[in-house]
Image 1 (cartoon, helix red, strand yellow):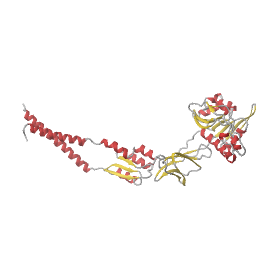
Image 2 (cartoon, helix red, strand yellow):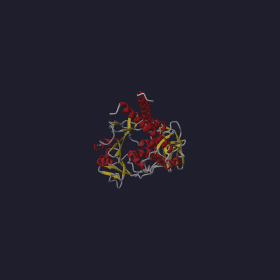
Image 3 (cartoon, rainbow, N blue to C red):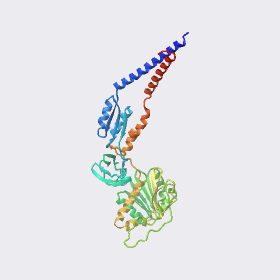
Length: 428
């Protein structure tokens, strides 16, 4: 049977073996790290293509840090994302303004382009297209600019940073059906829409069982029409077809008594209230919408959106019904705006009616090819690569390799235990 001294000596040899093994592992790791030392590649917005290619081809490149000092294109951002997914640690830093731009087409015959810009704080944003500068704006709370023609893509720039967006292709508009009794309102609403470029077909009751209508008025479907305008209760016999038309994606503008028709009551956003006369005009006065007679909209549905409100009450409200949109109009006798609106009355009346029809017209698929840049560059790079390195470094620092600390603890404990054992049995 082995004595306690022999067991202790065997234990001391085991501790020496552990100590030598830990030292050997530490030496091997240090030599391996020295032989295959990794490097951190730095890049700027101008050199990112070269540095990404170098990081792909160099086995020593373990990380890449991008200093965003200018515009980073979409394909450059995608290359950085692919590099990150391949195992290279990719970080970025830089002061990218929270800039965003989008271009849409108005759903009207002239298909004007509308630019929507936000971000930049108090800094001026330079808007330009492929043909040159469009305008300079400040858009800390957002800005909207209507332009007639845009060439190529739109660039919104603050210094070296920029957001880009393409304009959708113009889509052809369908017709507009007007249902109304004979009167000034129907006459000038049809005139305004025709002048704006809409193809208008109308049905006007002229006497009992006698209608004045355009050829080819029916059928009412989304392949032929964008919207129906019901100016009064004479649209009652068309109500079932109008309800189906809206459910399939068409638009409806309901005015006055048309909102109270039984089959339309369930899709309109509100009901008309008691009529209030307009402002009495003095000599040289001109009419604007607040001066018109109005039937304030009441009993608004929970999902209705108020678009316009005057002193008398809500005058415009909209809601979605099925796949379509419905606009309720509280203004009465809008023709007075055209006739008594001064030099700008005709144009303003025409534009108002065209915009109203465009607001309920269905959207056509006019998606444009994506530009090389991003509509919101800061959001795009954060979505692809995460937060900037000033934030990411604090998170990464907690994920260091614990093996060196474990080896140090093993070496210290083995050494101290072996020395203590030898001292207790009186050996040096």
